[in-house]
Image 1: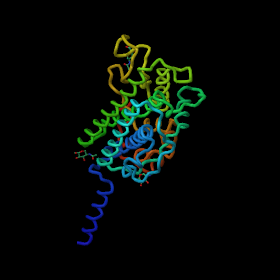
Image 2 (image 1 turned 90 degrees about the vertical axis):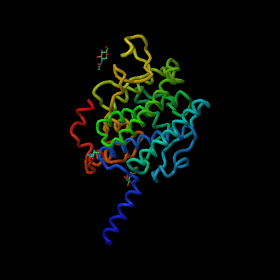
Image 3 (image 1 turned 60 degrees about the vertical axis):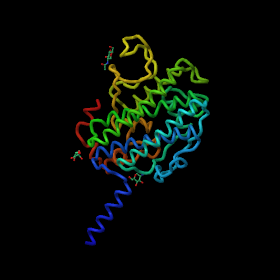
Image 4 (image 1 turned 180 degrees about the horizontal axis):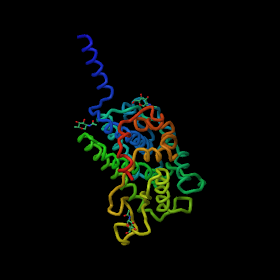
Amino acid sequence: MNLLFIFLLVRLITTICTNAQVSDPCDVDLLQLSLNLEYLEAEFFLFGALGHGLDTVAPDLAMGGSPPIGGQAARLTPFLKDVAKQFAFQEVGHLRAIQEAVGGFPRPLLDLSAANFARIMNDAIGETLYPPFNPYANDINFLLASYLIPHVGLTGYVGSALYLNDSSIRTLAAGLLAVESGQDAVIRALLYQHALLNLHPHSITVSETTSRLSALRNRLARSAEDRDQGILQPWHMWSGGVTHGNIIAGNNDSVAFARKPAEILRIMYATGDERKPGGFLPNGANGTLAQSYLTDGMVASECSLMPPIDFYYN
Ligand SMILES: *[C@@H]1O[C@H](CO)[C@@H](O)[C@H](O)[C@H]1NC(C)=O
Ligand SMILES: *[C@@H]1O[C@H](CO)[C@@H](O)[C@H](O)[C@H]1NC(C)=O
Ligand SMILES: *[C@@H]1O[C@H](CO)[C@@H](O)[C@H](O)[C@H]1NC(C)=O
């Protein structure tokens, strides 16, 4: 009687603590991998738009994780500030939805500093820009910094599709994917309007900068082909050469490509190595999949051990 009571109590507490309704290992692990990216997006857009982050807006969702490094209000026109605010609260919603569905973990340490973005931009351009790239300086710079993030999340959601088991989680992932790709399309369309302007005060165009950032993502992910592309292409695959515009990135049939979990981490760490944290996540991402790489398999994810994972993604 006593034991049963304790058992029920422990189960109740566990349920309340993790808030999870789903226990399939891939459902939990893949959505929790995305949770890291949603934290990053939420904090970046909140700080950019409002000058403060989750700890002010929705402290419970941070679950006691360390505050981000270097977030700040961006110098934005009222129009872009409004767009950034909308993105920010979309991301807050995504955090809530994922935590409710599969349980969460404390916000990982995030590096939103101008210096971190400047290093990534230097890597992309292949030289040390002076003055350094500052994501918070103006609309175009903020859009270029934003170009880096939701697209990675969306390719991760495409990659999850094969492994999500529970239909309610598949539906959630489809809904998250839809809004992430909406954000990516808005960011790319706004950059496309200024494609031929220079990245002030440097003599490289906005369009060329997006191509270099996409090439950097391809390089860091070590993916099989150059799938990631900027907003202008020499000819456009699906258009038969009728336009150079590429405001929505996809393959020849305009189908978005998938990235596997290790590729997502290689990009977010900016190290090209899922076992070497850095970049936006100086201490690494949390959740079983990310931790399995950081601990040499001491934390095992049943999901990452499923055989077709590499076959499917390449
Ligand atoms: C996948 O979902 C089905 C039905 O919802 C369930 O019976 C099965 O155990 C799940 N698979 C895993 C690996 O959890
Ligand atoms: C990772 O998440 C677990 C809960 O799943 C938590 O106990 C741990 O402190 C987190 N690690 C970091 C570095 O935040
Ligand atoms: C896409 O189309 C171009 C031009 O028709 C072709 O050269 C290329 O091989 C195609 N790529 C794939 C992955 O099918």
